[in-house]
Image (cartoon, rainbow, N blue to C red):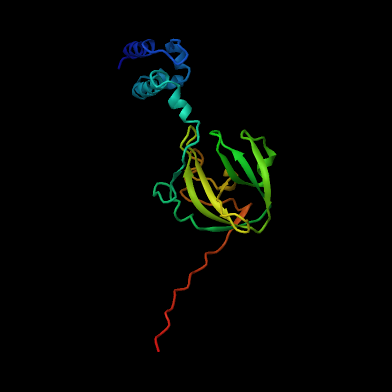
Length: 220
């Protein structure tokens, strides 16, 4: 689409729609959300149109309800067995803590409270989410990897959950991202690795215990 045609099309889409605040959006205002090298380069016009259509759809008839829904509690998706995330070999591995850690009640942006295991380093920095320290996990405790869950709200991020031996509860705990080694699933712009692991500074992996086959007694 020629440049003049693109902006005429854009003007028609925007001026025909009212935002949830009852005001009309102008082309220049919307352009602030799109990098200039995309918006002004003719070879990117198709992708730019997709961005515009998406934003217009969010701002018009959809209204506030769909957006607000993204910030409400929702059921996480279990991706533990998905072949797209290469997590199955990580599930069931057991790790021993090398330092004391903290059980913290972390409030997610949706209002959900996650029991989260945090390393000492996390307390060096301010937290964007409210958190409350509930207990201290001693050095030498065992952590068993259980699930990979995906948040279904506005964030959409991945979370690793585990169980901890020596506690009086079977409830799973969410592992802080500071405990996870980087891979392409949790650090798409910094790693190409497909492997899941934990930071060796904080935890060491225990050798897998081979299970002995059951031997049926011979009948006499």
